[in-house]
Length: 44
Image 1 (cartoon, rainbow, N blue to C red):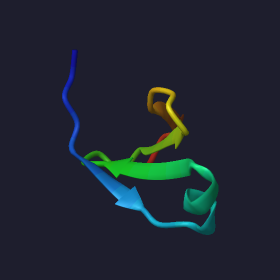
Image 2 (cartoon, rainbow, N blue to C red):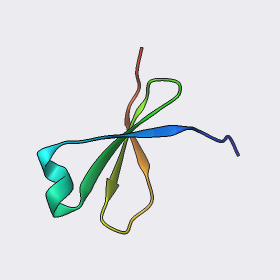
Image 3 (cartoon, helix red, strand yellow):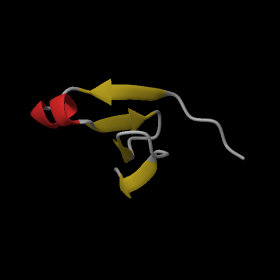
């Protein structure tokens, strides 16, 4: 299981519980309220 370093990106959707994260490889991840993070799209 790989480990990632995440940086949270602030968006207005954060107010309603939808958070976006960027990992150390440039991939975008999404987290909706209490669910697990899922990869949204690949970077680079």
